[in-house]
Image 1 (spheres, rainbow, N blue to C red):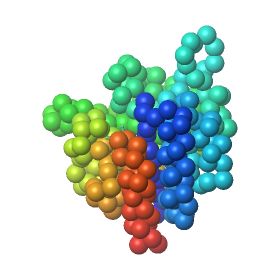
Image 2 (cartoon, rainbow, N blue to C red; image 1 turned 60 degrees about the vertical axis):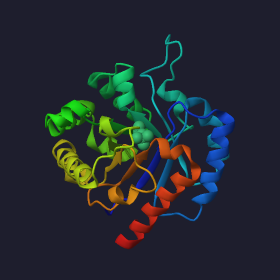
Image 3 (cartoon, rainbow, N blue to C red; image 1 turned 30 degrees about the vertical axis):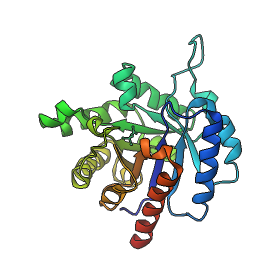
Length: 260
Ligand code: PGA
């Protein structure tokens, strides 16, 4: 664990209706009330953002959207960045499910990062290699190309000012129950950090958080959170269970206190 404030973010994907979302958000809110040293972020489906915002108004739990369109206009079914202003602080951009199931390219991911920053929202930029790329030793090349492309033309100061975050999520580890080894994730995230130094300078890079995501649960979280380069976790499946998610937050908090 690093000196940066760790973040534990839950990505609920297309799970939970508004009633269920409010129920779990309420229980997470109460369970993390005494936790000050970890930033807790929930990313529910769009429809739950406004009611959750209201429910969490007195809480330190922050909210994120899972995706966003580039702009307002004749785009039936889309949500533009301005519509998220006031509802959430973070926006997940470039999640591998968006890249693979919805055809999002590096160029589109870059445009979304810029659109998010232009509205003073913070991107949680997801990058990660496929199983095939991993097995053929291309992890570093693929991940660094994704980071470079996503941050093309993006000012480091803007990224830092907004509180932008990068999440390394190897595609083969997402939703499979087969996470990356902590040391492997740490090595890739160390590489991402060095790349951020190149792209944004030492000062900015030292403040940006880089998370690990992919089959993180309460049993394996410490293996990631105790790594020197890893600043927290982006949690999918386990974040749907309030108790499990809270346990991950507590573990991050314990490790953080040990560092201080
Ligand atoms: P998982 O999902 O924790 O269920 O593997 C992580 C993610 O998709 O962000």
